[in-house]
Amino acid sequence: MMMMTIRLPIIVLVWWYTMMMMMQLSSFIRPVHSLASASASASSTQKRPIQAVYAGPPERYPEYQKTLQQAFQKSQLDVSLTKINDLTTTQQQHTINPSFVDYIIYSPNGPLQDFTPFTNLKAVLSLRAGVDGIVDNPTLPTSIPVARLVDPGLREGMVEYVVGHTLRYHLSIDKLWQQTHAGIWMSTRIIPSLARQRTVGILGLGELGGSCAEALTRLHFQVYGWSRTEKQQQKRSDHDHDNTIHCCHGPEGLDIVLAQSDILVLLLPDTPETHHIIHRETLSKCKPGVKLINVGRGSAIQEDDLLEALHSGMVGGATLDVFQQEPLPRDHGFWNHPNVLITPHIAAKTRATTASTVIAENIQRAERGEPLLYVVDREAGY
Image 1 (cartoon, rainbow, N blue to C red):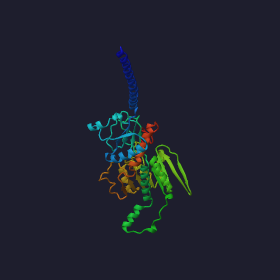
Image 2: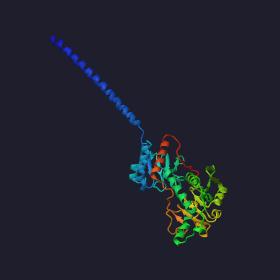
Image 3: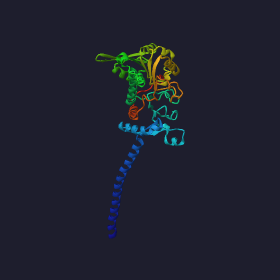
Image 4: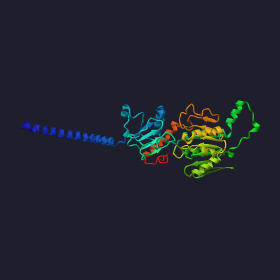
């Protein structure tokens, strides 16, 4: 009886101790379980990185990879950037799931032409100012916005090219070069004109054309500009000179610009309306000996008609950076003409550093639900 009295409290004590341990263990397990559940929940709702595909020239990818990642980081964008070569290869299909791609960083001389696999695409961001080759691409739905590239580096490069060659013609550098090599001293026969006495016509008053026009007015050139649709005339007073960009539009406006221009600059997009806009008839409306600078699209000029006008002296000189076929065939008449200067499509090269900043800004705007910069009018073609 004594033994039973002693053992009973021991059994009760063991039971009580066991229950207390289980309660403590239970209170420890519950928070761990809750933490795991919270972690799983957070993981399931965590936003995936933005998927961007580089579809520009493959040889420039290392440069763009660096500058784009720097621009994304600066804009605090979590972007997974992938290079695309050819989606038909098995290896590439393992690398990229097209349905996950949000943005395509595009160039018409890159490998991508079929947009069909990109079913959830948010936008196509061009690496060039021109968008010919994509606006009428049947595999890209019209609901997908296309943004062309307008960045400081491209704009500055174009302005410097146009101003430089305008000044070359204005100062008769070519003629002086010829006289130098002929050993001719003709100072008494040359009275250089001032810029205010010279008229420059610009066909195409978009972002680049407008920038060139403004730069030329600052040098006191008389500037006439033409566009397909009406633009507001820009006027700026500069001490004793009125820096006005005379804006013209439509067929009548084109005739005015052609008749006024000593130097004619072409900065037109490639559209049905601008195709071969410079031909025998339009050239006949220009001042005799007009100088021509084409930095827009090669399709704007009927090349045989221009050659004919150069041979006759109707056109006094041409600086051509773009052509209907590039590279320009070696047997083309432009190569051997003494009044033609050929440059290999370098007037407005895209600089990766400045271009990447614009690309990042547009992705940031799209992710915030804001309008993209420099959206192309797919119907108009620019």
